[in-house]
Length: 454
Image 1 (cartoon, rainbow, N blue to C red):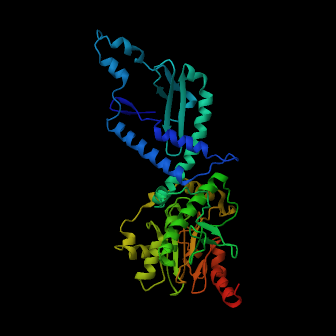
Image 2: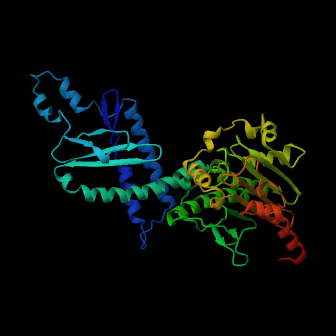
């Protein structure tokens, strides 16, 4: 692939030693069911190859690539220069790409194919679409179909790995897998977390296999008809495990359950996959109105915010309400004004930060369907934790319901409805928020536990 800069056409090194090593490693990680097992080793290989390519591309763009285009060099030579006859074959590209293979709005692309056996790759990119066109000469022309199939396979493998890499970066968790000494599965299970045979909760265990004296459980939402394929589920599980890892590190280092649940929820807010923070759904006006709550069970105190629009991490704002105000819930402009000047609002974000194509499409579909569509995008996030000092805490964050009325507040912002914690238990709910509100579900669960022990 080539990048054009001030008349130069320098290669951006589509194949390097590290990228070749990455592709070979990807192929070796494909299991018997044709599904790839993504490991921390793969993530490290991708990281190294990515940094190498980025450096080479920057050099090309700054004019420090591999030298001038051969055609430009040929034209610069006088006609009597003996080198000119050797450069004459590079006078004109022999492949032009037109028609349906091109992207909309692009009428013609030029593939620079000079040699008798050469492959031209034309890359066309838009915000929501990428097209790669292959054209060849000589022996490459005979194997284009096979090359195309191979490219599709490898692109898919690299894409799913790149998504995981980007998510880890977005959640502020890229350093751990890169620095980890031993390979770690990243499809939702690792040796660091196991299912408790007694209560079905995710329990943190150490490397020796013995159960630790703290517990952290998180969720990424629940709802009807979540149409997710296996690949998407794998990515979602990776994001959940990343958040679980970040929260468990807090507990492992002796931190409080309150800090742990905030850390996990904050990471999920930074991931576009979930309906909280970055990935929040739009209301019917195309705006984001987010809410969050954090509860310190042993101290019986809580903080909540609702209808905030410019707060990157609503769960941090909720913690601020709990610790820096005399109130438990602050809403809308009042919450935004309260946060002004505090650390949680030093760098406010605008609507563009929360905009994602997937959420915009969901709003469009919701408005077109009216009241007949179900809430199939309810990825509210939550976490509950027990630290080694037996302190309990809960945290939850959401963007609400897609297409909701302006000013709507759900169960996530109301202690006793979608969240609760005391010195005996911690609860974080997900589902139909209005039902949870009407029936104060979290409080009823707590009462049932206190009266029956169930």
